Image (cartoon, rainbow, N blue to C red; front, side, top):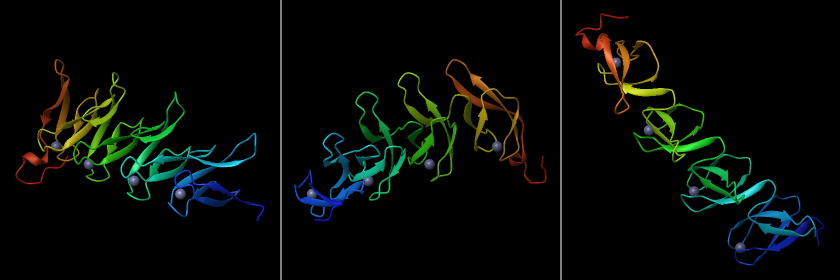
Length: 215
Ligand SMILES: [Zn+2]
Ligand SMILES: [Zn+2]
Ligand SMILES: [Zn+2]
Ligand SMILES: [Zn+2]
């Protein structure tokens, strides 16, 4: 028998699976299950499990495939359905799982095209890589859930009343020039309903018949 080879039974179908003791993961030749190879520190015996000190197996929430990843990974792309999940560890149980949030990242749906966008929790402006539109990342203090919308901590996205393009701006700001039509706008807030909008101070080129005016 090869000194460096060991055999353990697959936890799924009980077939014997041989592996090299330097390997970190093993795959059952019969049922194709993935296993993390672990070693009992007391007995020195090897066994198959769902995690060891570096690796962990989680189930893809989209296609149920088993994916092995490093415990330090945050964004994990499923090799079967190619969707991205975020790896997190439950503070109480210590168990790893895939979901919408990891230590530093969060996955939210684009409000325009519904694509899933992964962003850093510290981000405010998030650009959708599918439709190209910018949304703002907000944390709801009550539910502790992140979502993408028209408002974040410091910024707000409003429509330019002249050209109807969405402009992201700081909440506390002086007049702002629309990058699309060059109109000069002032952000205002309807306090009762927490609604932001732009007042037009001067109209840019979109309001003119010709494009002769430039600012
Ligand atoms: Zn098996
Ligand atoms: Zn998948
Ligand atoms: Zn989008
Ligand atoms: Zn405009």
